[in-house]
Amino acid sequence: AQSVSQHNHHVILSEAASLELGCNYSYGGTVNLFWYVQYPGQHLQLLLKYFSGDPLVKGIKGFEAEFIKSKFSFNLRKPSVQWSDTAEYFCAAQRSTGGATNKLIFGTGTLLAVQP
Amino acid sequence: KAGVTQTPRYLIKTRGQQVTLSCSPISGHRSVSWYQQTPGQGLQFLFEYFSETQRNKGNFPGRFSGRQFSNSRSEMNVSTLELGDSALYLCASSPDVETQYFGPGTRLLVL
Image (cartoon, rainbow over all chains, first blue to last red; front, side, top):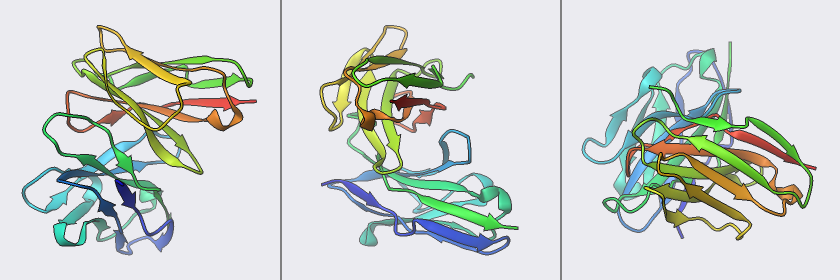
């Protein structure tokens, strides 16, 4: 069955600490991968995406993620977090079948709290 | 460009009633997908419409239905509401099979 796993449900960091959120997927075939963020009271926003090519992708607000095919992983990283990064982060996967569907399978989310 | 809009933003219904939620995609986007977000189950895919045709459907009972109009606007309907249907319902639009852009959601409370 298709699934996306996020290992950390709650993460608490101090400002300037480094961040790494884990994401693993289980999918038959090739996949497109995404990280979305949901700030308090706001809607889901795209942080970054991987479709193909360079496995290290850079997104908005200094975030980056690395696709490691052999580990079925797509971990999110940021070298130095800020209080404004406090939010819930979702990893998602989409079957890459050339135009069949936009269906996203989401992980359960990681709630990040950054202490000033 | 204006983003994805959803109406209403908040809704309170009682068990057994039905509800219709509306979604207007970003101009030019032909794909509209619906998701249910709850604390217990997270984000779950309901269905996707593309050019007025349902392209994919998630594992929800037949009480959940949807449609898409020729202008790409979409509605989803939930009949015979149950307490467990209380959730944030998110709509997302996309030009085709690409990145999806989410609306603010409709928060439904079933009493």
